[in-house]
Image (cartoon, rainbow, N blue to C red):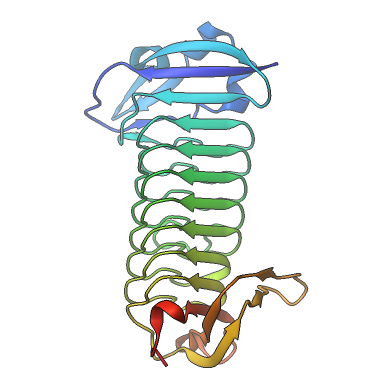
Length: 275
C-alpha cells in the first residue's frame, strides 16, 4: 500500500506560495503531524503547510500520490525535482510546475503558468488546459533546457515553447505562439494546431512536426522536398519515430552555420502552396 495525501487550500492567496518541499516520494514516510508541519515559503514569510491547507491522508494501491484541491495560480514549484509518484492538481498550477522533474507524473486539470517542465529530465506532465510561456524551456540566460520526459498540453501553449530543448518530447494539441523551438538542440516538438512566427529560430538539432497551419517560414531554412510517413531520427543510432502524413521537409536553421541538423516537418494538406 502507498499513501495519498490530499491538501485543500483554505483561503485565497495574496502572494506566491512555494510547494517545492512537498513531493509524493517524501510524504510517503511522514506522519500526518509531520506533513502538517512542513515549512513553506509564502511571499517573504515561512509558514507551516497546515497554516495554508487542510490535510487528509489515505492508503491507496500503487505509487504515492499528492492531490491539490482548490488550487491557485499563485502556487509555484509543484513537483519540483520530483522523481516518482503522482501529483494531481484539481485546477490551475503556477510557475515552475515540474521543474527539474526526473520521474513520476503530474496531471494539471486546469492551466499552467510560465516555465512548465523547466529543465525537465524525465517523467510526464499532462495539462488539460493551456500553458503559458517557456513550456519545456529553461531559465533566461541558460542554454541547457529540457533533456528528457514528456509534456502534453491539450490546449494552447504561448511563446518560446521548448526553449533550448535537448531531449524528450513536447506535444501541444492546440496552437503555439512565437519562437517555438527557439535554440532547439534535440528532442521532438509536435504541434497539432497552428504556429506563429519565427518557428525553429536558431535551432541546431531535433525535430519540429506541425500538423496545423504555419504562419511563417524563416528564410534560413533549406527546403528538401515532400516526404510521406517519415521515420524521423534525432541521432544516427536512433531507431526513429514514424509520423503519419505528408509533409514538407526543411533543415535549418542555417543562421547558426553550415552544420545544423534541425528538422522541420510541415503538413502539406493544411499548408498547400507553401512551396
